[in-house]
Amino acid sequence: MVELLDLQKKFILAHLGEGDTAVDFTMGNGYDTVFLSKTVGPTGRVIAFDIQEKALVSTEQNLRKNGCPDNWRLICASHDRANEFVTGGEKIKAGMFNLGYLPGAGNKQLTTKRSTTLPAVQRAMEMLGENAVLLVAVYPGHPEGAAEGRELTEYFSTISRFKYSISQFRMLNSPESPFFMIIETK
Image (cartoon, rainbow, N blue to C red; front, side, top):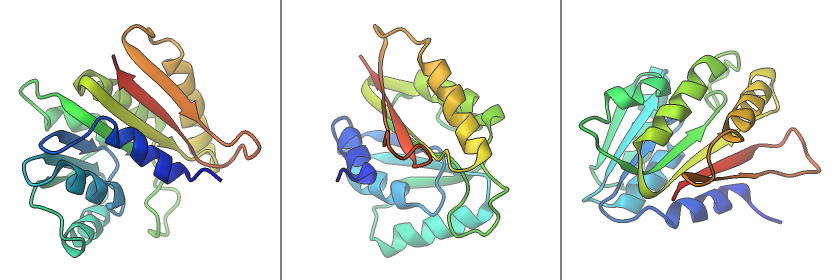
Protein backbone atom coordinates (compact mmCIF):
# COMPACT_ATOMS: atom_id res chain seq x y z
CA MET A 1 0.00 0.00 0.00
CA VAL A 2 1.20 3.52 -0.78
CA GLU A 3 2.15 5.52 2.31
CA LEU A 4 1.11 9.10 1.66
CA LEU A 5 3.77 10.58 3.97
CA ASP A 6 6.52 8.71 2.15
CA LEU A 7 5.15 9.84 -1.20
CA GLN A 8 5.04 13.47 -0.01
CA LYS A 9 8.71 13.33 0.94
CA LYS A 10 9.66 11.88 -2.45
CA PHE A 11 8.07 14.85 -4.18
CA ILE A 12 9.84 17.30 -1.89
CA LEU A 13 13.21 15.56 -2.30
CA ALA A 14 12.93 15.83 -6.09
CA HIS A 15 13.22 19.61 -5.70
CA LEU A 16 14.85 20.42 -2.35
CA GLY A 17 18.50 19.99 -1.43
CA GLU A 18 21.47 21.25 0.55
CA GLY A 19 21.59 25.04 0.87
CA ASP A 20 18.01 25.69 -0.27
CA THR A 21 15.27 27.66 1.50
CA ALA A 22 12.06 25.93 2.57
CA VAL A 23 8.94 26.99 4.45
CA ASP A 24 6.72 24.95 6.75
CA PHE A 25 3.51 26.98 6.58
CA THR A 26 1.77 24.97 9.34
CA MET A 27 4.43 23.63 11.70
CA GLY A 28 2.17 21.74 14.13
CA ASN A 29 4.48 19.52 16.16
CA GLY A 30 7.38 20.11 13.80
CA TYR A 31 7.78 16.80 11.98
CA ASP A 32 7.83 18.49 8.57
CA THR A 33 10.10 21.21 9.96
CA VAL A 34 12.59 18.54 11.07
CA PHE A 35 12.44 16.88 7.64
CA LEU A 36 13.00 20.20 5.87
CA SER A 37 15.82 21.24 8.23
CA LYS A 38 17.74 18.02 7.72
CA THR A 39 17.18 18.16 3.96
CA VAL A 40 18.53 21.69 3.46
CA GLY A 41 21.39 21.11 5.92
CA PRO A 42 23.51 23.66 7.74
CA THR A 43 23.79 26.00 4.74
CA GLY A 44 20.06 26.03 4.04
CA ARG A 45 17.22 27.82 5.74
CA VAL A 46 13.80 26.80 7.07
CA ILE A 47 11.10 29.19 8.20
CA ALA A 48 8.09 27.68 10.00
CA PHE A 49 4.75 29.21 10.99
CA ASP A 50 1.94 28.40 13.39
CA ILE A 51 -0.61 30.49 15.27
CA GLN A 52 -0.24 28.51 18.49
CA GLU A 53 2.64 29.07 20.89
CA LYS A 54 2.26 25.42 21.91
CA ALA A 55 3.25 24.42 18.35
CA LEU A 56 6.43 26.52 18.51
CA VAL A 57 7.47 24.92 21.81
CA SER A 58 6.78 21.40 20.53
CA THR A 59 8.57 22.07 17.24
CA GLU A 60 11.66 23.53 18.90
CA GLN A 61 11.88 20.48 21.18
CA ASN A 62 11.50 18.19 18.17
CA LEU A 63 14.21 20.03 16.20
CA ARG A 64 16.68 19.87 19.09
CA LYS A 65 15.86 16.24 19.94
CA ASN A 66 16.52 15.25 16.32
CA GLY A 67 19.87 17.05 16.12
CA CYS A 68 18.80 19.45 13.38
CA PRO A 69 21.25 22.11 12.26
CA ASP A 70 20.67 25.65 13.48
CA ASN A 71 19.05 26.68 10.19
CA TRP A 72 15.48 27.29 11.30
CA ARG A 73 13.31 30.17 12.42
CA LEU A 74 9.97 29.56 14.14
CA ILE A 75 7.35 32.29 13.86
CA CYS A 76 4.08 32.58 15.78
CA ALA A 77 1.92 33.99 12.99
CA SER A 78 -0.70 32.81 10.54
CA HIS A 79 0.50 31.13 7.36
CA ASP A 80 -1.15 33.85 5.28
CA ARG A 81 1.48 36.29 6.63
CA ALA A 82 4.50 34.27 5.46
CA ASN A 83 5.40 36.78 2.78
CA GLU A 84 6.04 39.33 5.56
CA PHE A 85 8.86 37.16 6.87
CA VAL A 86 10.27 35.69 3.66
CA THR A 87 11.32 39.01 2.22
CA GLY A 88 13.57 40.69 -0.28
CA GLY A 89 12.23 38.69 -3.19
CA GLU A 90 13.81 35.50 -1.80
CA LYS A 91 12.47 32.46 -3.62
CA ILE A 92 11.82 29.17 -1.89
CA LYS A 93 12.47 25.69 -3.28
CA ALA A 94 9.85 23.91 -1.18
CA GLY A 95 6.87 24.63 1.00
CA MET A 96 4.61 22.38 3.03
CA PHE A 97 1.08 22.86 4.37
CA ASN A 98 -0.56 20.34 6.69
CA LEU A 99 -4.04 21.76 7.10
CA GLY A 100 -6.34 21.00 10.00
CA TYR A 101 -5.69 21.20 13.72
CA LEU A 102 -2.66 20.73 15.95
CA PRO A 103 -2.31 16.97 16.57
CA GLY A 104 -2.52 16.11 20.25
CA ALA A 105 -3.65 19.61 21.25
CA GLY A 106 -7.11 18.51 22.26
CA ASN A 107 -8.88 21.54 20.71
CA LYS A 108 -10.11 20.32 17.36
CA GLN A 109 -12.15 23.52 16.92
CA LEU A 110 -8.93 25.53 16.44
CA THR A 111 -8.19 24.61 12.84
CA THR A 112 -6.92 26.16 9.65
CA LYS A 113 -9.63 28.12 7.88
CA ARG A 114 -10.49 28.79 4.25
CA SER A 115 -10.30 32.54 4.94
CA THR A 116 -6.53 32.29 5.49
CA THR A 117 -5.60 29.06 3.72
CA LEU A 118 -6.38 30.11 0.16
CA PRO A 119 -4.53 33.46 0.46
CA ALA A 120 -1.62 31.64 2.13
CA VAL A 121 -1.39 29.11 -0.69
CA GLN A 122 -1.64 31.85 -3.32
CA ARG A 123 1.21 33.79 -1.66
CA ALA A 124 3.25 30.61 -1.26
CA MET A 125 2.93 29.92 -4.98
CA GLU A 126 4.26 33.43 -5.69
CA MET A 127 7.29 32.68 -3.45
CA LEU A 128 8.26 29.55 -5.36
CA GLY A 129 11.44 29.73 -7.43
CA GLU A 130 12.32 27.68 -10.49
CA ASN A 131 12.02 23.90 -10.19
CA ALA A 132 10.27 24.33 -6.83
CA VAL A 133 7.45 22.49 -5.10
CA LEU A 134 4.58 23.22 -2.77
CA LEU A 135 2.79 20.41 -0.98
CA VAL A 136 -0.66 20.92 0.57
CA ALA A 137 -2.04 18.12 2.76
CA VAL A 138 -5.80 18.26 3.30
CA TYR A 139 -7.78 16.49 6.03
CA PRO A 140 -11.41 16.21 4.84
CA GLY A 141 -12.59 14.24 7.91
CA HIS A 142 -13.96 17.41 9.53
CA PRO A 143 -16.26 20.02 7.95
CA GLU A 144 -13.72 22.85 7.57
CA GLY A 145 -11.11 20.45 6.17
CA ALA A 146 -13.55 19.16 3.57
CA ALA A 147 -14.45 22.74 2.62
CA GLU A 148 -10.75 23.70 2.38
CA GLY A 149 -10.15 20.75 0.09
CA ARG A 150 -13.03 21.69 -2.22
CA GLU A 151 -11.97 25.34 -2.37
CA LEU A 152 -8.34 24.51 -3.13
CA THR A 153 -9.30 21.95 -5.78
CA GLU A 154 -11.53 24.52 -7.49
CA TYR A 155 -8.81 27.19 -7.32
CA PHE A 156 -6.05 24.91 -8.64
CA SER A 157 -8.23 23.86 -11.57
CA THR A 158 -8.13 27.50 -12.81
CA ILE A 159 -4.31 27.78 -12.87
CA SER A 160 -2.45 27.67 -16.19
CA ARG A 161 -0.72 24.34 -16.76
CA PHE A 162 2.00 26.24 -18.59
CA LYS A 163 3.11 27.92 -15.36
CA TYR A 164 2.50 25.17 -12.78
CA SER A 165 2.00 21.43 -12.78
CA ILE A 166 -0.65 20.64 -10.16
CA SER A 167 -1.57 17.11 -9.11
CA GLN A 168 -3.78 15.59 -6.45
CA PHE A 169 -3.15 12.28 -4.68
CA ARG A 170 -5.93 10.62 -2.74
CA MET A 171 -7.43 7.29 -1.81
CA LEU A 172 -10.49 6.96 -4.05
CA ASN A 173 -12.09 4.28 -1.90
CA SER A 174 -11.68 6.28 1.33
CA PRO A 175 -13.14 9.77 0.74
CA GLU A 176 -12.49 11.04 4.29
CA SER A 177 -8.82 10.02 4.30
CA PRO A 178 -6.21 12.76 4.04
CA PHE A 179 -5.02 13.65 0.56
CA PHE A 180 -2.48 16.05 -0.80
CA MET A 181 -1.84 18.33 -3.71
CA ILE A 182 1.52 18.97 -5.34
CA ILE A 183 2.22 22.28 -7.04
CA GLU A 184 5.44 22.27 -9.10
CA THR A 185 6.85 25.26 -10.94
CA LYS A 186 7.86 24.81 -14.55
